[in-house]
Amino acid sequence: MTDKKALTLLKKYYLPYTAEGTLSESDRADAFKSGILVPDSAMTHDEIITAIKSLSEDISLESTAKAFLYSLSSGDMRYHTALSSLVWARSLPKHEFISNNAEKAGWRTPSCSVCGCTHGLVTTERIDWNN
Image (tube, rainbow, N blue to C red; front, top):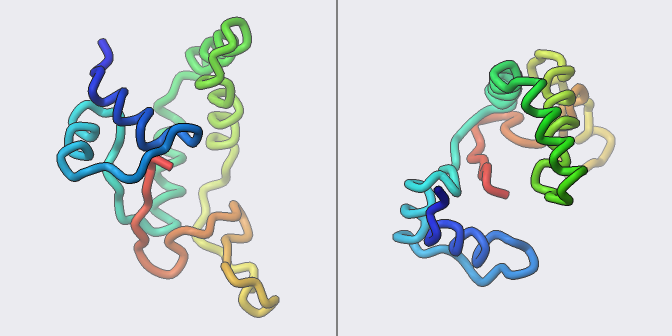
C-alpha cells in the first residue's frame, strides 16, 4: 500500500516537470518515514564503491530482468534501466580512488579514472540519494 501523502510530496518536489520549491522539515520527515525518500549519507568514494558492490549482490538478476521486461510490455519506464544498472554495478571492479590527474589537465572537477565518480574523492562528502 502506498502512502498517499508521501507520494504527493514526491510528485510535488522531485518530479522534474512538476517540482515546486523545497520540502519543509516535517514533510521531509514524513517522506523518510514512509520510505519514499532516503536521508543523505556521508561517504567517501571508496565507501560508495563498496556499497554499490554489496547492494548489487543482494539484488536478484532474475527479478531485475522481470522488472525490465515489465517495463517494455507495460510502458512503465520506472523499471526500464533496472537491468542495465544492475549489470553495470556487478561489472564495476572493486577499487579505491585512482586519480586521473584531472587537475593537472586543467579540469575543474577531478574524477576517478576507473569509474568516473566525482564524489567523496578526498574526504567524506554528503551524498543525496534522492536526486
